[in-house]
Length: 444
Ligand code: FE2
Image (cartoon, rainbow, N blue to C red; front, side, top):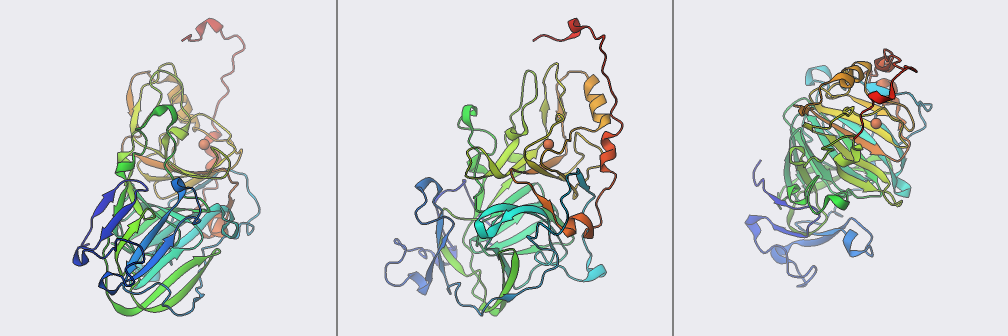
């Protein structure tokens, strides 16, 4: 992929010009009266014009033709992308999915990223700008002369199998498994792949992904701003039969145009796509005793209007040292006022057998969950020595304050629901002993 360069920093104000046309970004937005190189100026707004400066997001694109030059949008049929959260009766049970099936070309022909979108669960409504959807993509072919954008939400892509070669209006990104990327509201992109590819998408309506506040942690730690990479301008000047697919109010629409939408020669602003390598996450954890909440593993958060309450957090469980003394170290049993969707990018999840890369689990609001019986027994007796946990693994969670509903595809059509998931807790034994000697208790 030519011209693959990045600028580092989270939410920075960048200026980027394709090296073939230096000076493409004028000193002012719309003056002089005509743009350098005969370009059109177009603003892409990611926040209300009047948002406070700290949350104000916009970029100016200097492009060969304005985005408005296209034929009318028409409905684009899609079987598995939906925001109908009432098609399946509510189900509070723990859910687990085996790896989602990736169709081969031999099986059903070419399937691209857009055709391979499947909505698994979600809540809320893009029309009122609050909510989220969890999608799974499975595809085997590139999108060709087709671009996609969401008018509904910000997209966080988590590739699990296969590298994504993404062309955006801002430039090109290569996103491999164990990396993530965020493509914000309205940004057009096209995905190419090497072959059978699968991953997860968190789409948040009405809130931007931000770095979490660090509080007493200080100025450094968790995901550091410098490790976020934004592509640099790279245009193509191509007349062709191009299809623009828009996700709008939960449905897809397509419009034809006679030119490539990736014709941005230069841009400036703080509203951009970006990527991040999960290996760059600075892990923080308890170093004496007890168990920290998983919020210490938050990479990005999309906050609701309630202080400290996220529409969705993106959280990872990376390889790390576990050093706590006198402590049950795995995730604790709990019931949460949040919905937790988990997926595994690679390796074996530390707290449970049977959860596999490319599949997922959903523990809904107040639904009990925690380590399986074998994990509990082993961790209750393990020697309290420092050790690496989750080696070779990358698990993640989309955690939401909203009560998510499962779609028809997630409930049945995907055909990988594990009906025996509840059995992982069935062997849990009672250890209650009313004669237990309190003097056995460790006192810190
Ligand atoms: Fe949980």
